[in-house]
Image 1 (spheres, rainbow, N blue to C red):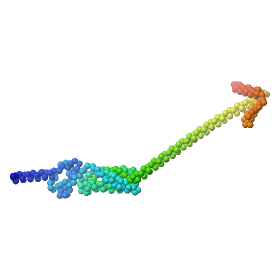
Image 2: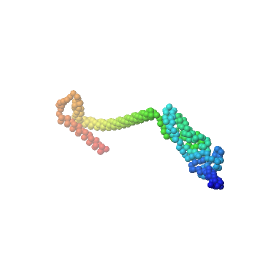
Image 3: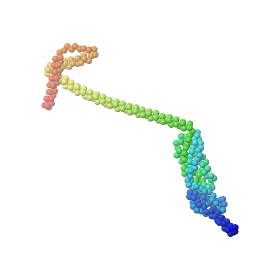
Length: 313
């Protein structure tokens, strides 16, 4: 049988082990523990080895100081234009003050979850459906500001609030698809009309340029025709002057010139008549040819005289 000394020694050893176990605390990295004395907060223990007074002090709350993610359950939200959608979100947060997170709020995770859901309903409920679907970044920013301000007294820093999905009912999705199709068809019609308008403008400009060039061509042709008539008139004037000089000098060939000229003009009028199909011309061709030859001789003499006078001058 064991004596009393052995039993007392064993009891003291067990008590020493219990005391050491309750007095020595190892706080892991990324956590903060609060120490309470008789139920009242005493201090905060950082990661590492710490000692407390057994049976007087105890560990109160063990707070995770690393950034964590909080999944927000899906909920139905009614927009400003009475469209009902289902939203799904996620929140990222980090505890900065272990004391506030432990003693300022009861069930921090549940409180943050309800707070985020309430703000989602408030922010999205003030928007119309189209604005809600097209301004995801603005919604996230607004939610972050509101939730972060609300959780500041709890010693929590909200780093991000993300709307993962906004799901309208299927009938709204179908209506939006039809609206998008109508908008695209409208843009296609507008672009086609603008193309036709541009084409019509180009065609009109081309016709304008063509008319301008045609008018300029006609003007140039008229100028050249007028110049030709002027030169022809000058030649006829010289010829008339030469014939007049020949008549004055008593040359009979000048008279033949006028007779031949009138004769040729009469033949031209007869040939241009629509009623005459066959013409009987009772004339002597030799006399007409002689008259024309006489005209040529008169013209040569006049031009030779002009040349000689020019040389003498």
